Each structure stands twice: as structure tokens, then as C-alpha cells.
Length: 127
Image 1 (cartoon, one colour):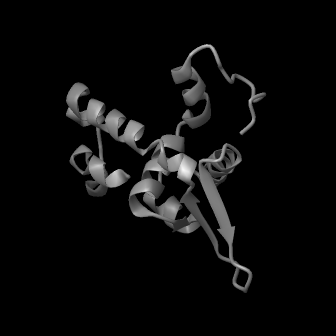
Image 2: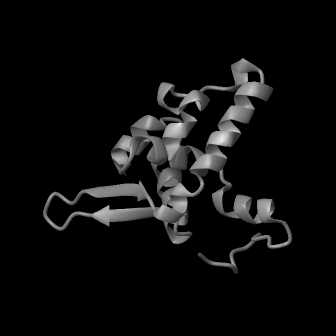
């Protein structure tokens, strides 16, 4: 993890955490990988159709740089790249589950869309 990243805050623990997991698609990518397990890039792209390939690749690269996601590349052709959540990244599962529960309890339902496998009632399965 790079502490010298622009905008990285250390004066508030929540802000410091958000400096790492903030980003339009990072929480979604983390949730998908935590709930569904390791996934290929194309599978992630199918799961999150609103994100462009370029942005998804950038978000994955940043999550990998910060030690929350790992990338595995197969040695034999065709090359297959798989992404998964590191042990460090898994420590965010309870916080992400709590955010999902908060959204369900505090936001209008037309603003909240959770996949069946990511419902707050299943939050205990996240870890």
C-alpha cells in the first residue's frame, strides 16, 4: 500500500479507509469477489455491466496495489487472469456488509439494488 498516494488522509481512520476503498466501482468489485469468490476479468465485467473495461482494469489495479485484491495469471496458453480477495481484503467484509444493511434501512428502496447473493440477510456469509 502506498501511503504517499494523492489525497491519502491519515487524520481520520474512516477517511483513510475511504482513500483506499473509495472509487465508484471498488466497493462493488470487492463485494462481488467476497461473495462469489475468485473471478476472471470477463466474469467481473459481466457482473458489473455499467463499468467500462478500462475503468474496471484500473480499479482492479488499484485494489491490487493496495493489497486488497490479488491477480493470478496462468502459465499455459490461453493465458487466464483471475482476481480474488486477499486476506487483508476479507477483513473489509463486515464493514461492507454493515454498509449494505445501512442502505437497506435508510435509503429509499428505489435507490438500493442488491443482487440476491449480496442481501444484507446473507451478510454473515461474507466472511
